[in-house]
Amino acid sequence: MTKSVFHIVTISCLAVGLAACIRVRETKTDALKVELGEAKSAAIEMRMSAGELSIQGGAGALAEGSFTYNVPRYKPEVDYHVFNNQGRLSIEQRRRAGVFFGHQENRWDIRLNNAVPIELKLKFGAGEGNLDLRGLSLTSLGIDMGVGSLKLDLSGEHKENLDVRIKGGVGEGTIYLPEGVGVRAKVKGGIGSVHAGAMHKDGDVYTNDAYGKTAVSINISVEAGIGSIHLKMR
Image 1 (cartoon, rainbow, N blue to C red):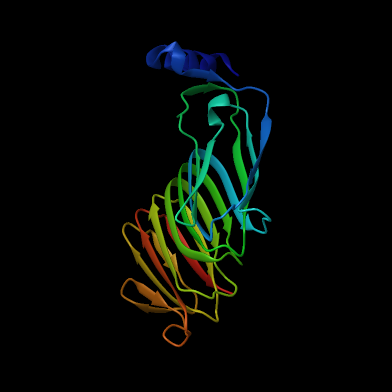
Image 2 (cartoon, rainbow, N blue to C red):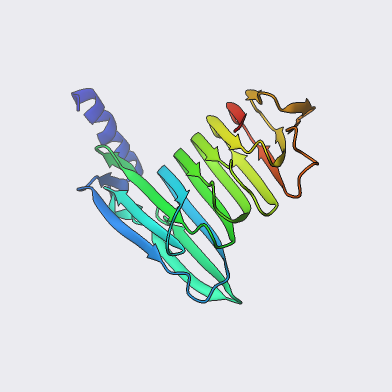
């Protein structure tokens, strides 16, 4: 750290109070495993202030994975209970960070069960989201994101209708969609550019060739100041 940078950090710490200045620690990894129990479906909500969020299928339990961090207050709180045959899982980073000394690391690598119907809500402030949701039995998906990049894969087979809502100031977003399932995407807000390939455009609505012709469909709403969004069929 150069002398000038050190002075800037020191002044920042004095400005916000010494209690808000946080020194990074040794990197730690905690395991995650949540059994489904008596639940027949699940509502899952994840809240992450900043970092890297990776989600995919393939879990034997309802949720498995790990949390890797080097700031103690980044340790998430996990709560799970079953009510009326629905499992309710909350993974939340409650405490916000202050001014840091050193490089901070915060990464969640999570796998979800493919067979359980899931309502999934994600909220993260800044960073990178890599969401490979192929094969999951999603019934709804909500993403509220601050600044960063989002890669969302919804391609593959779908047995139920799926409603997707994406909101926030994503720098760049890429959404992979299935060619064999009807897709309708409405994109509004301060979008810098939309790249939709072979999809049909009608105002701010984009549809694929299969839309209106399949038993199930995917309806997507994208709202907010995204720098650019890519809708890719595969």
